[in-house]
Amino acid sequence: MAWTWRFEKADGTEVPPAVEPEEFTTQGDAESWVGEIWKELVEGGADQVVLFEDGTLIYGPMSLHGEAVDET
Image (tube, rainbow, N blue to C red):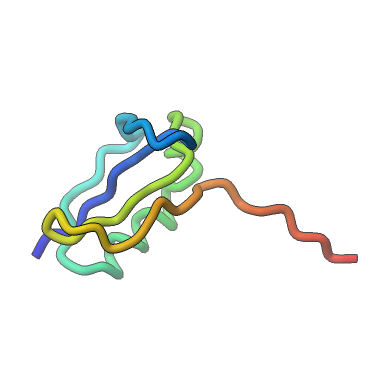
């Protein structure tokens, strides 16, 4: 099994990643990788990611932009 990411603009247009990913052997490895480098992906032009397992959509799009939290 191979877990892979697709990188997109907010409108769903695919963009090349700022950091080239590998093919991951587990979903956890794929998610950890995005968690570690999401800022670089955003700086490189990606707004969201989509996760696939062997070409099958698992979830997404998932925004790489954090939501503002009102702590008042």
